Image 1 (cartoon, rainbow, N blue to C red):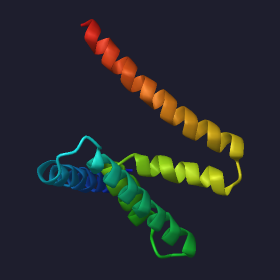
Image 2: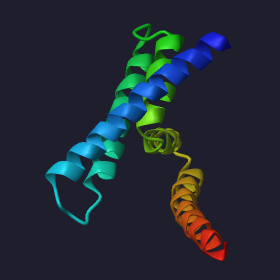
Image 3: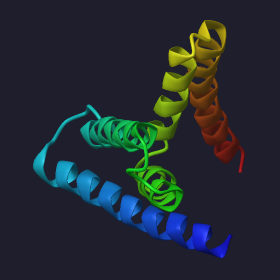
Length: 125
């Protein structure tokens, strides 16, 4: 268990630093209202997690430890959107249409409402 925690923690550190660097790059080079840094990180993270799990399904290209480091650690630190996208893809691929629609729509809607609620709560204090 300690090995898994260290793999995820190290990967998370790398992913978080990479997210910070991408965000910083966009802040310094582009003056725009559109959140390009978050958008870019989410799309790159989704591509990476697709590659990681795609390689995992092909055979013994990635050990469980390497997959944990890359997918949960680096991609998780880089963006949780990548995990959301992979989970949604699995439901889609399994033709779980109702669960796919429920998961994607509720994740978006309730996530948005949770951000609103959090901001509302902070205004009370």
